[in-house]
Image (cartoon, rainbow over all chains, first blue to last red; front, side):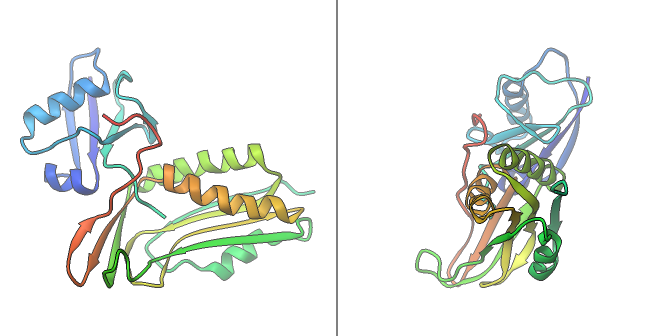
Length: 79
Length: 148
């Protein structure tokens, strides 16, 4: 399956990119994806970050589906 | 009584509070309340030069809808504006606005109080604070979901 991955704030800086397109073997959850990204992007530490799929917050054990947009970002500090 | 409308704003321009007040004002609703969050300086003893707000714009609007649905479940609201500004803001400039109308004052006032708390939990926005001595990402809040 193909998915889009987005990074924001300090994770965007660490990844040196805002966006990736990845081809993945299903089934895969958010935690599995984070492990794979950390393996491929040395220096990018996703522990402690939040995740959203298709603009809604999800827990790390949420399964990923074809076409999903998965965003990783630090705890939020808006307002 | 008219149906309440929601207006969600994500912008790099200044927040137009007068326009927001006009948007929620309605003869059917006798109370209008507003909350503005502004850039504070000094912060933690340091003079702030500016804060650069980064946001995930599409998700901000999705989460504003989540916020509005929550607020309307608990309160009897008229019209509601939720607005967040992104980009570089100087001390004193408004970064967030919550403006609500309701038939009676309590609901509009509570919408502002509960709304700013939920905005700080839910809106995917990050502050990069630049002071006279340092520049850093401001430590955030992870209560929206279980972190990795």
